Length: 51
Image: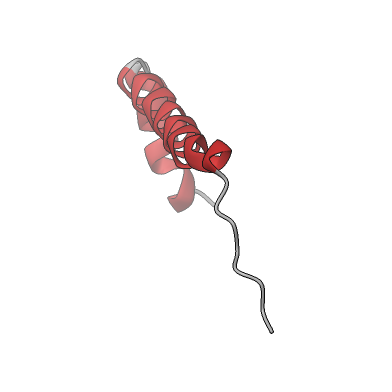
């Protein structure tokens, strides 16, 4: 009635690529946050409170 789904071993790399992309984006955010100058960080921290 139903055919069995054949698992293709070529798709084994997809989770690794997704994790790699996510980790890379997270790492870029961390590096940019660490390298942010103090005056820019202060300006961004007050931004939601300014009218």
